[in-house]
Length: 87
Image 1: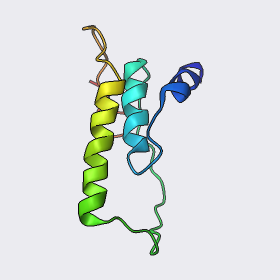
Image 2 (image 1 turned 30 degrees about the vertical axis):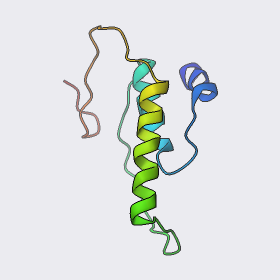
Image 3 (image 1 turned 90 degrees about the horizontal axis):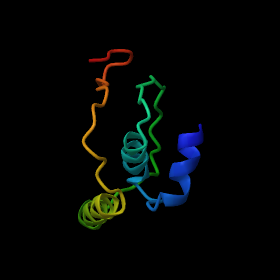
Image 4 (image 1 turned 120 degrees about the horizontal axis):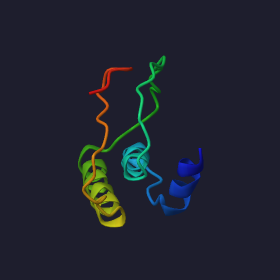
């Protein structure tokens, strides 16, 4: 939890791509990421504008890339996308 608190002040994205930034910050701080199954319910009122939304997503990804500096080369444990599987 301490690592998560460290990432909060430097988190910049508050829109659609905020979760991408959280995952990148978690990796930056060396946190282990686990996939947890959830029950998803689609919000029928949710909207993403195809062109302007995509442009905003690209801008947000670039902002994340500029704000989060690459970590130094070090051995990092890889975590697969399947829950509980490590390499």
